[in-house]
Image (tube, one colour):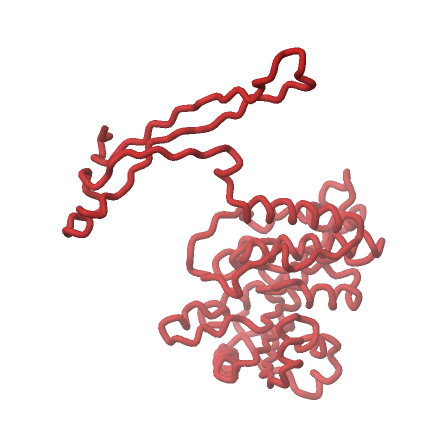
Length: 339
């Protein structure tokens, strides 16, 4: 039978098999009957396909039987991954760090694609108490210390990866709120569980770092007010080698306008990569922008953050193990006369 679209319809029905075939006196504990789903599935006619008839033609299908049970409908890999993730979350609450093999993800994501995740309408709608409960106790009304102005995020790690930089910065600036922004959902979940595990095993520490899944290339103004940030980090971003994909790069003349909006005057933007062409690209974009000026090398030698750029992240450690070269560009947000 064909449905209104002209394709073969699928008619499922269920058969109940009674597995309790023994006499009632010999049954110890009755087991529930097995429920099996039987469906008519369209199967292509190889002869018609070979003769050049399109596969979606209504005449290409003939009904056949298929037996599926409830456990077979769910892929084994999905069952294993969900159980492994639940186990990892339980361990993180007990102070054990999560393992990356439970959070496998692609190395990069397309920042121009449409993703579905909650986004605050404005920076005022971003709930800091959810991310930093130590600084925003219940009943504080969003204020961290009495009548003092509420704390705000000051450091932003764009594309934070597995959270290595956040973990390294947390003890250096224990009273500064830091937020990692990551597009990949599995990686974001790993960082969340890592932070929870560190908080559980080190009471009173790592309370100032958190992570959120978002696309910073699209929604950065939804999280930060004008001049809110003092430091922004772009460590080992996706190089997007093809010229047609340069618009996907996280450092560009257009995006620097948004970064300058979120950074306070005197705030610093840190970039580093192991791709020389990308390093030249980021440096040229920052050099040509009127709101950024290079930080002198003498000042960088005294900055404790600079030492973490190439050693704190997993990508930087990989480059160091392979003896690779890194290309760093550090610029300060400057003020124009008309500002």
